[in-house]
Image 1 (cartoon, rainbow, N blue to C red):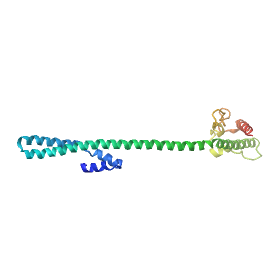
Image 2 (image 1 turned 180 degrees about the vertical axis):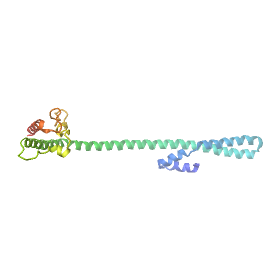
Image 3 (image 1 turned 90 degrees about the horizontal axis):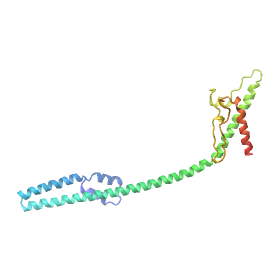
Image 4 (image 1 turned 120 degrees about the vertical axis):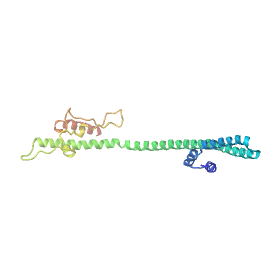
Length: 216
């Protein structure tokens, strides 16, 4: 990029970062220094073979070339300084933006977590519906009317047909919102009962009765 265009970019107080970066990459100090070196070589030749007019002319060219080198170095320093300030401002703005976003999310988390006790109670109520249905099904299957087919376990029939599906009541853990208080629900059931509520439903029902008593 020629010196005129470089100066035009730098002299604009609000040149975009992309323009400043392009100008910095286009300074081409090496070419300017090569040009000045070539002129110095020519001057030394003229000192021997030329006259004063030729010498004055080449010295004027050297002065212009050296001034251009100095300007390009000055432009480099200015461009680097401007880019550093832009980067610093971007970093400050980014830090502020991340802080504001984190603050906003923190507030949203507080609102979301405030729903946890209610949601946990809803899950426990769902476990109660399932457990009571399973108890009723187990009791009915133990004393089937003549010719009646056994009723499929409620949870297994909804979630899948595999016999190894553990009941939700035996896998769900609902910690208390207050860490100092006991869990709202702990996985319960005798060791190894998987999918068959008949052998452990009394454990679940007893825990549900305990929780209902605590609520009342």
